[in-house]
Amino acid sequence: MGDERSDAAAPAIEAVEADAIGGGRLRYYDLVMAAFVAILLLSNVLGAGKVAQIVLPGIGPWPFGAGILFFPVSYIIGDVLTEVYGYARARRVIWVGFAATLFMALMSWVVVALPPAPDWTNQAAYETIFGQVPRIVFASMCAFWAGEFVNSYVLARMKVATGGRHLWMRTIGSTVAGQAIDSLIFYPLAFWGAEGWTNALVIRVLFTQWALKVGWEVLLTPLTYVVIGALKRAEGLDVYDRATNFTPFRARV
Image (cartoon, rainbow, N blue to C red; front, side):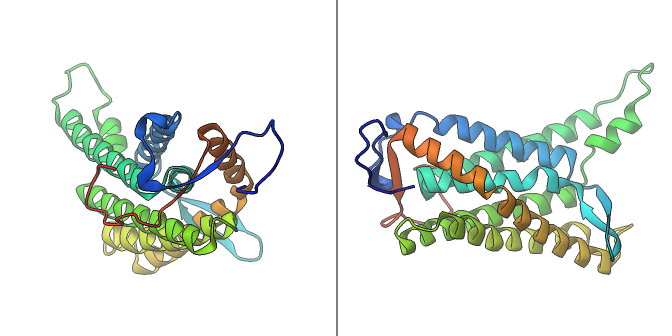
C-alpha cells in the first residue's frame, strides 16, 4: 500500500491532504458510512447488556459481553474511514452514528411504552429485549463517542508520523487506545453497583472486553488491509491529515 509502481494496469493512488478533497470525488464513502451505522445499531440492540460465558482451558469459566461479536467491527470500519477518507470524514460518520443510536434509544422507549393490545401477550418479552435501561444507554453513548474519536485521532496522527507506513501498527495501536477508553467509560458507568453485577465482575468483563476487542483487530488485520487497499485504489486517493482541525465538536467536513 502506498508503494510507487510502474505497472500501467494498477490504478494510480494520489497522496493528498484531507482538506483538499471534494466530496463529489468520493465514490464509496456513503456505503462505508452505512455499514458503520448498521454495525453500531446491531451491537447496541443484540449484545450490549448480555454477559455470555466461555470455558478457557486451564482457567475455567470466563464471562464476556456478548456485544463483542459486533461492536469491534465498528472500530475496524472506523479505521477504514480514517485511513481512506481522513479524520474529518470519519468524524462526520461518528456523529451520524451517535445521532442514529440516540434516535434508536428514543424510539425503543416510545414503542415499549405504548400500551399493548389486550390479546397481545408478548409485552414482557418485548420489554426485556428492547426496554433499554437509561443508564446503559447513557454509558454506551458516552463510551462510543469518546472511544471512536480517540481511535480516529490516534490513527490519523500515527499515519502522518509514519509517513503512511506500517498500517498494522496504526490500526492496532489506535484500537488499543480507543477500546481502552470505551471500556473504561462504559462498564463502570453502566454496571458499577448494578443488580447482578459485582464490582469484581465489572472489572473482569471490562478487561476481558478490551483484550477481546484488540484481539479481534489483530485477527482481522489481513481483511482490513484488503478493504483499505481496495478502497484506496477505487477512490484513487491516499489521505493525510497534516492540516486537519482535530476538534470532535463539529459534524461538517
